[in-house]
Figure 1 (tube, rainbow, N blue to C red):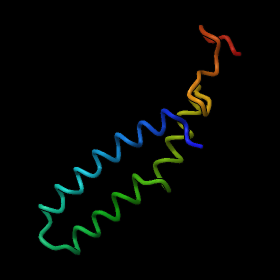
Figure 2 (figure 1 turned 60 degrees about the vertical axis):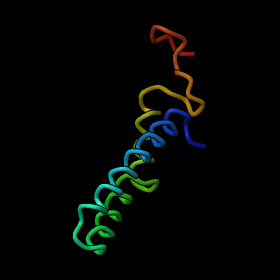
Figure 3 (figure 1 turned 135 degrees about the horizontal axis):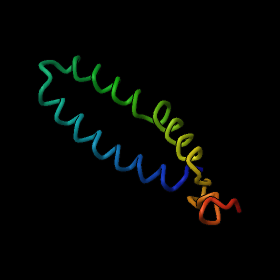
Length: 78
């Protein structure tokens, strides 16, 4: 199960990535170039690369999987 914050960030990222890929399709002289660019972008920002790193970062900075902070306030652990 993916953290709600991670899920929200990925949704925002995917929306923008889609727009960038659409713009690149218009600007690339050949479809082969666009396919290569698309593959690189999806490899770098997809579920296999960026998502695990983002999930680890969110957990490292104090959010449980359900999006709740790991402290009871003012740095006091629960």
